[in-house]
Image (cartoon, rainbow, N blue to C red):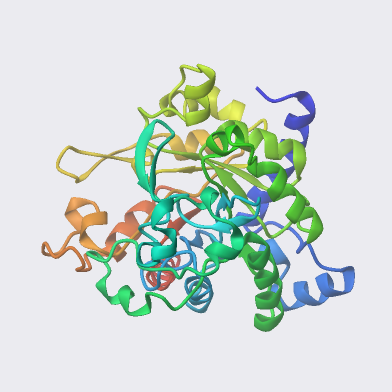
Length: 386
């Protein structure tokens, strides 16, 4: 349970974020008063301008471009995403934060084609899992900048391989500067949703993430309670630490019900995600965070054959304690859809994504992470007007 100060601060930010997503208020932050007023006039009130359900571009728009690149981020905005998940944050050896889905970069960059880095390939235990490859913490930022991004799942997205090698790895500071540039260029506030990746693992290496995130947010004036930067993590203690360092909206990510957050494993906390999504667990989360990001299977269960099961009480239970829900991840391709929405068996073939979106929107979720922002925007339009 968080301290009383954390609970008080958390409640205030939770109310703000909830009101924002519900269209009840909020102001653009990280801008001067004059710029804020001008931007509010253009966007209809900053956070208040975000539609509901909110469309969150997952790693940009990973269905169409290699993930966590400026090409992916900008296309997400072009396609109508309300928020861009710009930044799964991993540190470099010299302490910079870069945007990669995982610290292991063999599957998302061309590092294997660089003979000068062949000796960096190694095996590490990452959150209890033996992982072989190349890791961000073994490279300086200058070295990582010599690499280029590639498509992570080419079997499902062969069309994305067209863009292999086009973009470099962005840093979090570059993303914060990009956010300002895009806000000016598009005439409305751009929102981002970065995540601290494996924070316990990196803290043990002397590369604590939360302090680095907070320092950059303070530098750019984006550490306040209605800043256009929502922070997320799968480790509750990382969110608790961020709650003490910054006033940003905070979201706890939740994996499968039988899983344990790695920080719980490290500290001997026996609770699983199933414990965190009980009314008691949600009340505790509401003491230091404003939302949860559950896997879609926590909203509607899945049967053994991959079809949808029963709708859970998670949406209602979370809303009861003032938490918003942004589940993950909606994708158009057959393998990622519930069985009843698949069409054919092609790994890169699209199924009935619109039907799946409609089903999940009907549960009352406040938003959704998606690799296909354009599909999500059209599905929302159908849902709202239906």
